[in-house]
Amino acid sequence: MLPHSEIARATGMKFNPVAIVWTDKKPAGALEPKAGAWGCVMWLFAKVAKDGKTAVFSSETVGCAGGAMGLGFGRPLEKHAARNEEGFCSFLSNGLEGAVDKKAYEAIIAQSFDAHHTKMLIEGERFMKNPKAVHNFLKNLPVYDVKGRYIVMKPISKVEDSEEVKSVVFVANADQIAALSLLANYETGNIREGIVVAAGAAGCQAMGVCTYVEGESKKPRAVVGLTDLAARMHVRNVLGKDVLTFSVPFAIYQRMERDVKGSFLELDLWRGLRDS
Image (cartoon, rainbow, N blue to C red):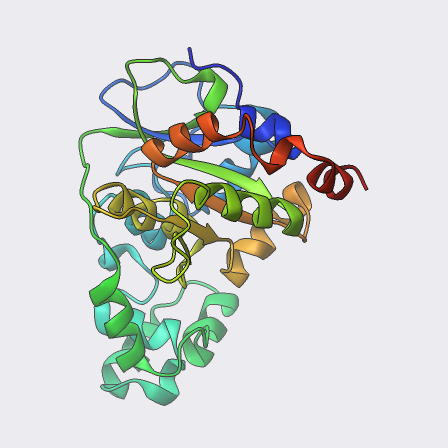
């Protein structure tokens, strides 16, 4: 088992740092979405962070196409309410107004199963200006496909030494985000190339595939997330409304853990901010 996080202790974290693990073995007793039912990945993430639970997802049980993309189960847009990539690009932007093939999109709207989704499909989420911008977003969003395996979220303190940790996620307030950003850059001092990036992606995508790909980079970065307004709404009753996520590849997490000792986190300036 890994020890409790020194970073969490020194920064006064209210929530458990969450490890995202790839595994061939389904953990017993873990929280899991019901197969075939819609659900947001962030609901279970919030329970792991707040209550110390363990959650597990598979390609059959992840309850949202965006969540499947975010955790690394391919790109199953046919399971989205918008049915396909063209529909998804309209949905994420300006809906029917911007649809390239309006008749095809109207047919998708006609298949909507309730008034709420019909309204969303017509209006679009407006997170991007038009379908072209969403196509570019999809082009740049990393794609992983771990079908046949499980993706587990658990507190970092419950991780076994042999487990394959792909991402470690902190839920942090503004002062803690500032401290984590400084700590991530503590050994490099390289502010121009950016050791921290804010992912303009869904909450699950920021901590999932956007962080996985950083772990494969020669110059890996930390990823700030929960900039996704829908995800913020889904977790605010559990995590509060004033937090973001800060996720790092496991190698960066280990380096940051080592760097706590002797750093600014042991001095009065930080302690004054933390304890005020």
